[in-house]
View 1 (cartoon, rainbow, N blue to C red):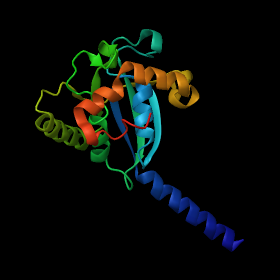
View 2 (view 1 turned 135 degrees about the vertical axis):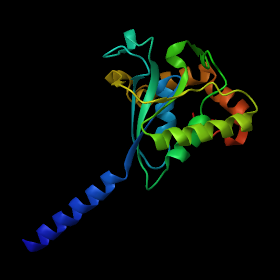
View 3 (view 1 turned 30 degrees about the vertical axis):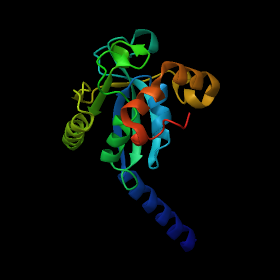
View 4 (view 1 turned 60 degrees about the horizontal axis):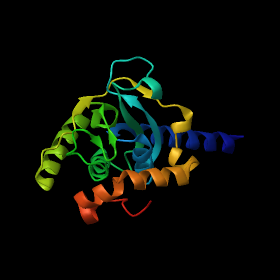
Length: 195
């Protein structure tokens, strides 16, 4: 009985320690299917949830999210991957110079954005945005805002790239996402040849 109690305490201690290292990031990068797909490949990312944020409408859905942006809430283990590393991936998987949308998707719903959950994230995002502007030599139009309400997208949008792989790959290729990212970033584009 004592061994079982010790084992349970060790497991509980590990779970608590692990939970303490979990953090959240929220990024809008055009179609949330693609953002989710890219971040699921990052070691240390525990979960990605597609959804809507950045607007004032309550209970946003796919049919009424026009004032919101498609975004992904990312849960990550900060002992494995840092917020700064996630920012590095974010910038290199979007076109942060496009003020009209992303790739073939146009309009407010598909604009980029970083939604910071605290001052530390906001400062890191601002520093990385300045560095990216210098690196690309072009104005970076991605806003950095305080995170607000995040409305989970419908179940059929979650992990769409896995559940509907052929449709997803057709969409991603046809939309020109990887081609544009490769044109911007070249060898620094982390996933351009993975799809």
